[in-house]
Amino acid sequence: MSLIGPKSQALQRRAQKVLPLGVNSNFRYWGEGVTPYVEKGQGAYLWDADGKKYIDYRMAFGPIILGHAYPEVDSKVAEEILSGVLFAMTGELEIAVAEMIVEMAPAVEMVRMACSGTEATMHAIRVARAYTGRDIILKFEGNYHGMHDHALWSTYAPVEAYGNQRSPIPVPGSSGIPKSMREFIITLPFNDFEGFERVMRSYGEQIAAVITEPCQGNCAAINPQDGFLQLIRQKTEEYGCVFILDEVKTGFRIANGGAQEYYGIKPDLATYAKALGNGYPAAAFGGKKEIMSIIGQGVAQGGTYTNNKPGIAAAYATLSLLKSKPILKSIAQRGQRLMDGLKDIFEENDIPAVFSGYPAMFAFSLGIESVANQRDWARSDHELYITLVESAIQRGVMPDHDAREPWFLSYSHSEKDIDDTLSVYADAVKAVRR
Ligand SMILES: Cc1ncc(COP(=O)(O)O)c(C=O)c1O
Image (cartoon, rainbow, N blue to C red):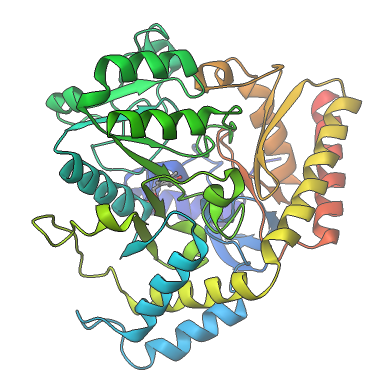
């Protein structure tokens, strides 16, 4: 059975004439004859171009926290766009969104809006450099902070390229990143307590910012080990560096106050996108007033679309819903049941699997017993993962093809969707084992 039908295959051929790889983002290309092309989405489901229905666990790489085409969000957007979408002036709705972010995110005292996670982290890095008067950024292998040149290092490269754990080699994530930028980046394995302390002792006073995702949301959702985020907080304070917590995936998903609330940790700056707008282009970065206040005082930040009405209206509706109902609790309960059920399936089939992440965004690595960083994850059984995923997709359940990408749940995933997913996955595993 092929993964995609004739119409999707025809769309791929047509798209490849005008779009490199036939897609608008490299991550959306899964290969020839397997790359899905979409028709529509509703709630927890999507339909591909051939009309086949799936329970969606990609949720567009995480933004869809409520569900596809969520009525309260779409109706707020529809209402707002009737009175114009862009003015290059500030309106009341965006002030209200900023107030809600400040109220919900424990570390955010002031905020600026943006359109994508890439923009949010790029601006946060600029502000951190301006605030400290330093240039170097420390990031962790396997974390992804967007497409800009400042942090697209040691993201998806084969770990063999990273060198020895004691002196990691930063590997650019793309041709076209100036070689000279190598000077401004230090990379380390995630959860490397000893390495982090050592690097901070040697370079702490030259480092502008330590940026990290709370969990490795772009590498199998590997969790921070106890005390790791606290160590980053402690050492960045000691050496006067800005601690940027990239909550683009975790923000407004794992708790209303994101990982800051979940772990009780206060970074200096935090970045948001994805769940903030339930799929519309809304992003933000914010943090301590003392740091954010330098924007406009010789520090540049802006963008024509940073207060685009569809994004702002969607953020307003999404945050209002998250604040008024226990939405994330309900997602977490269903996610936990799904994780537990999948664990049982692997156990019954004698497949070693380690689960990581949170019920609202989790991942599993097959064939290994523990995973602390991307170097460990690289030893997991990717071939088995992909075979299982393809078997599940053929049966109407769609997690991402890439084992690094977590399974994302939304408020629209029902108890029945979880039951159906578990029975599909059990069949998929049995079929693969046969
Ligand atoms: C943690 C993190 N930061 C930043 C980004 C970049 O966000 P965007 O794709 O909206 O530019 C992503 C995207 O997946 C992300 O996961």
